[in-house]
Image (cartoon, each protein chain N blue to C red):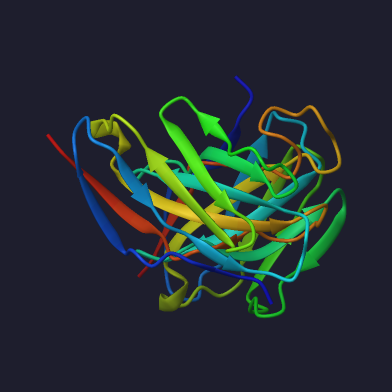
Amino acid sequence: AQTVTQSQPEMSVQEAETVTLSCTYDTSESDYYLFWYKQPPSRQMILVIRQEAYKQQNATENRFSVNFQKAAKSFSLKISDSQLGDAAMYFCAYRRLGSQGNLIFGKGTKLSVKP
Amino acid sequence: DAMVIQNPRYQVTQFGKPVTLSCSQTLNHNVMYWYQQKSSQAPKLLFHYYDKDFNNEADTPDNFQSRRPNTSFCFLDIRSPGLGDAAMYLCATSRDGTSGTPGGPDTQYFGPGTRLTVL
């Protein structure tokens, strides 16, 4: 069975600095999707970034980028120029390619941003 | 804007009193999901509809049921809520099997959730 591990329950970053959230996963599949979702306090869960496993190039979305290491089964999220609005719970998630099934979530990392 | 809408945002019910949560979407997505999320935990999938086909997770209690009368709407019915069912319930949608979708196929889009309190 696939599993997703986020080893950092909480992280803190100074405003305008860079922070990296770690995520590892376990799967025997060769093709799959990986996601980072952001869930601010009492607010909606939104997609931050998505990576297809068959793509070697790391995904980027403005200040958000990933370091996808397929052999190591690692999928970390880097947030550059951190802003107060980045404070949230961040979930790493895995999904098999083409599956009807569920996202497999990690337990989340709570990110605080200090002004 | 196309979106996933959940009503109500907050629901209070009594122990054992049936309750229904609703989800609607304007994304025309063919897959709809219901998740349960307890405080400081990751969302846990309860079930999903792939078009009209219902897919229940093995560990979802019988107390939880769902209906999808059409593409746009999906309901979560809790027949006899217990104190342990107090949680945030998240609806999500995806457009599986279609390339070119913003965010890509298989990306799930979440609603704002309904927070259920059981007294």
